[in-house]
Length: 201
Image 1 (cartoon, helix red, strand yellow):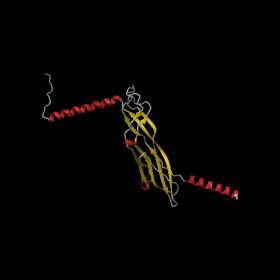
Image 2: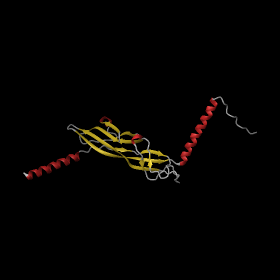
Image 3: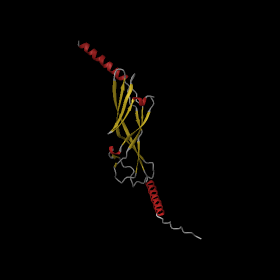
Image 4: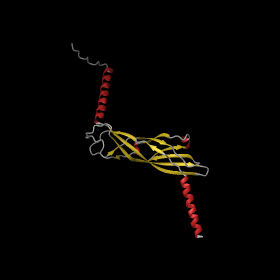
């Protein structure tokens, strides 16, 4: 009897392993880093407040043999993006965007970067923050027998771009020019003629 139980256990383990190997359900989600441009930071700053983030996605879920996609859900904090099987009817990679609102994002810690007193004049300075956020992915597949759900975790990356001080000066000068132009328009609307330009003879 004991020998029979051992043989049954071995057979059951073999069947379970074969079933696991035949199930190749995968979410297959790729995320492009979210780009954020920041101004030079005060010396010693270690925390950065991020704006709303957008992560471009490429999604191509695959279910096991004789199974079809029922749904795919991507969740980050209180943000959830849901897709149904018909979204993947043509078997092509689906392009979408995951938007993470600012109120769900806390300050993010960084190493010294984009310091206001830095002598680096390269406007293309950048810093990649890997695993800045984690997305939970659930894939539901079904066939004639029933349904299966698989879970995966996707790391979301943020790329910080540092604005140079020169760019800030250009932006400030442009704002000042716009203000001056608006003031001139207001004077003309009030009926005050602009002072004549001096002429040399």
